[in-house]
Image 1 (cartoon, rainbow, N blue to C red):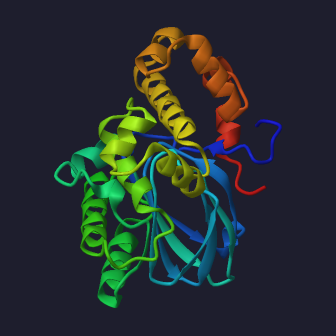
Image 2 (cartoon, rainbow, N blue to C red):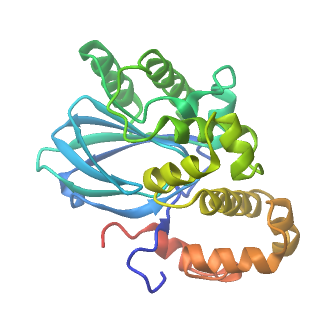
Length: 278
C-alpha cells in the first residue's frame, strides 16, 4: 500500500458490490474512532449526530460537534483523527455524475460552505432523512433527494459558516467542475484572484498544489473510465487527460503506491479499500 505513511489511500465511498449510485453510512466509536488519510471520486458530506470528531482537511484540523455538517469535494484528502466515545455521524456520498445531474441548476455548489453549524430544525430534519436510508441498498432516489436538500441548505447559509476553506479555493473548485483542463492562470482569473494567491490557499486548504489536484482529478477519471468501460490502459489514459500512458503510469505509482495493471488486476485495490486506521 505504498511505503510512505502519509500516502493517501484511494477508498471508494460507494459499496463495492452492486450498482449503487448513492449511499449513507453510519459511524460510531465501535469502529475505532479513526479513519485513515484517504480520497475518493465521490463528493461526501458528514453529519455529526452526537459527540465530537477531529478531522484533518488539507493542512487544517477541524473540530466538528453535534449539529455540524462537513463537505469534502471529490479528490480531496481527508482523515478522521479522533473522536469522543459518544460520537455518531452519518457519511453521505453520491456518484459524481449523479451529483452533477441532481445539482445541474446549482453549478456553484462547490463554492458553498464546507463546515456549517445547522439550525436545530435543519439538523433534526436531516437526521430523520438519513435514518430512513442509512446502510440500505436501492435508495438512490431518496439519497439524491437528500443530497439536493442538503445543498439547498448550504446555499441558504453561504454567509453563516465556520469554513476552513478560503473563498478563492471554493470558487476554483466550482470552476474546475466545469473546466477540468484549465490551468492555474485561467482558473484564478475566473475565481477573481491571482494565480499566486490561488496556489497558496489551494495548498493550504486541500493539502496539495493546484497542479497536483488537477492531476488527481485526471487519475479519478482514469479509474472511472477503466471501471465503467474496461478499456485499454493506454487509450484510457489519453481519454482521461494524460499526455501519455507513461505520465499516467508515473502519477498512478506516486499517488497510490502501485502500477495501474497491479491496481486493476490484483487484490491490491481490495486490500487498500479495507484499511480502516493506521
